[in-house]
Image (cartoon, rainbow, N blue to C red; front, side, top):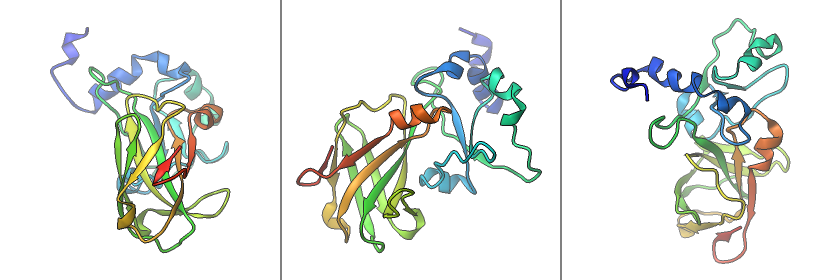
Length: 206
C-alpha cells in the first residue's frame, strides 16, 4: 500500500491508480473508457455512448495502455476542444473502473413522458425519466428510446432481469430495455456484455 498517496484527493491522485494498474489494458471486462460528449450532464443522461469510427473516435481509454497511445492512428488530431467524460469509483474500496451501461427504454410512441424505476434482479434500481431531454432514435430499428446511465463496480450477470416500477406513471408502453455496455475499447466485448430485454408479463423484462 502506498501510504504517501492516501492523504490527498485531486485529479493527480485519481490518475495515479489508473496509470499503475496496467491490467486494465488487457481486461476482458471493465476498462476506464471516456466518451466524447457536449456536456457532462448529457453524458450522465446516457446520450453519449457511441464510440464513433476508426477515423473519428468518440471513446478512448484513459492513459493506461502504452501500446494504444504509442499507435499514432489512435491519436485525436483535430485542433478543436474535445470533451471526454467518465465516471470512476473508489480505487481503495469498490474499484476505480465502473462498469458503465447506456440504458435505453424503447417504445413505439414518440411522445412518451413520465417517470419510473427499473428494479434489477441483482438488487440495483435505476430511475428513468422519459422526456425530450433524453430521447434518442435507436440505430437499427429507428424506434424511440429514452436513456439513462448506469455505472456499477460489478458486471451484470448474463441472466439478469428487470421489473418496471411505476408503469402507470408513464403514458406509453415499454417494448424493450437495452443495456449497452460501454466500458471496454473492444467492440466485440462491448457487444458480448450488452443485453436486450424483452417484455414477458406484468412489467417484467428478461
